[in-house]
Image (tube, rainbow, N blue to C red):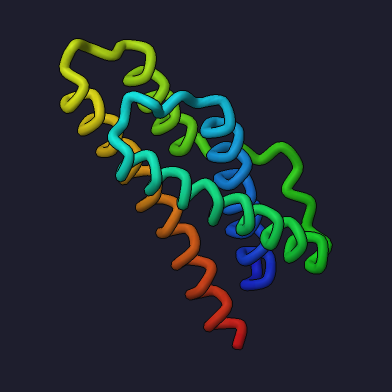
Length: 126
């Protein structure tokens, strides 16, 4: 049976996977078709994500948890949607940008839900 500490390790491993996947995707992504405001929002997210990845890795080491090659399948699916939008851009730049941002918002919301779950566990652990 899993205890709260192990559950924390699993959630942190998942957060680490999300951070890695997000950084990997956006480091190789061309978002120049988006307007400046949207590009900046994504850049801000990437910067926060990079700092978070380092913090989560440090926390996992302190808990002696090895996340291994953990991959989040939901993040994979959202990233596939983002890639598809980038590859199949239409003549309607505004519509492409809207679709991209809708998938981006799903990614951010999912990411936030993982952080909230960790907060709940930490509160339970005292």
